[in-house]
Length: 92
Image (cartoon, rainbow, N blue to C red):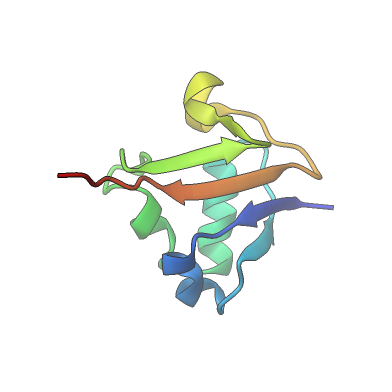
């Protein structure tokens, strides 16, 4: 069993139009590396040139924001759900 990664609509063209994909990893960093290995080009949309998450990308592990856990070092296990959510800004 693997971790289910939910892909936002703007990035689904990189996952063959799949809204959910299965990836493996011990933590968010290694999970994103596996996501990139399976779907080349997606990591550059999520991470900056240093490999850190872009500030407008939010990642949730089982509905908890990883910023309030251990960030990119947050451990994941089989059966977890990870959601990649781009921040939305707006207003007048």
